[in-house]
Length: 173
Image (tube, rainbow, N blue to C red; front, side, top):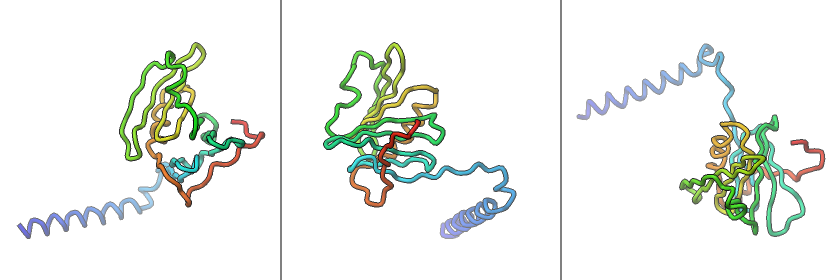
């Protein structure tokens, strides 16, 4: 049995070394897409998300007991508005326009999301913890993109996090 375990251990070590060598070879890196890098951004005093480095996060000024803002992709094709604090969830308003709602447990609480439809638009709505999120459903991938971002939600202060920028009138997205 000891010989079998030693052989298994050596094979895993060999496989790890071989994969490292293959990944570092010049031919392995040719044609490889650039990997996405993320950074944690604090959206309110008590919550943060991982956002791709190409995304920008903004907060709207002038609120005392609530926080509003948005984060947007570099090309402005995907924008999510957010709110936190003493505000209603998106599930409390226009309930008759909600088409469906789903929930999933996360390490930071229950993620609730759904689709709200009006005569003009479809909106993906979500809430987790004390945060609420809204985006217009433009593409088939918008729901997946939003959920992937929201699954990185963390509750609590984050002193090392990047902060959402104050919005300025020159913003075009």
